[in-house]
Length: 184
Image 1: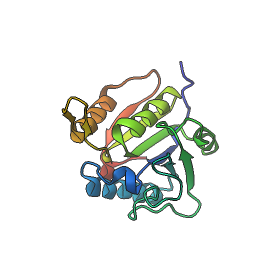
Image 2: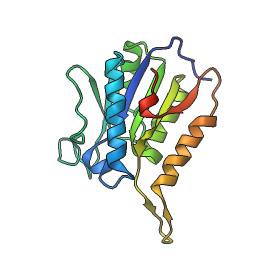
Image 3: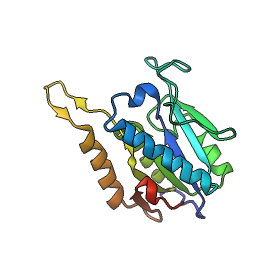
């Protein structure tokens, strides 16, 4: 069993809302606006905002597609973390930053729901953190399968939101909330 994190200090984790990551995202303009609202609400309440940014061979560091979308700008002093895997925890200093901030509760928003958001959510819970998924502030693309069928992005988003309403880990809480209703 994971060590359950004591306390009730929250952080907002914004994951991969980058130009190339969300360019085909389901309802991307609405989702980006909701991520921006979550950031605004966190800052207004003095909640730390941590920014996680993905890089890969097809999206190299500092390329145009690697950049944050123009609507989201990390503020001076906000922590930026860089990753190469779906999970924000793997081979990044995220756990060290969370310990430094004495965080016990992660509020999660970003992209892509079925890959990096899901991996961050489960990674947080497995490491003993409480989790709130910002239900209207994550997105992904449709997935075209080899057989010609399509898994629609909306269904992926809905599935993850539903999973976070019933998922139970001992000593931890999982929940969803819309950006306008966030309580840190």
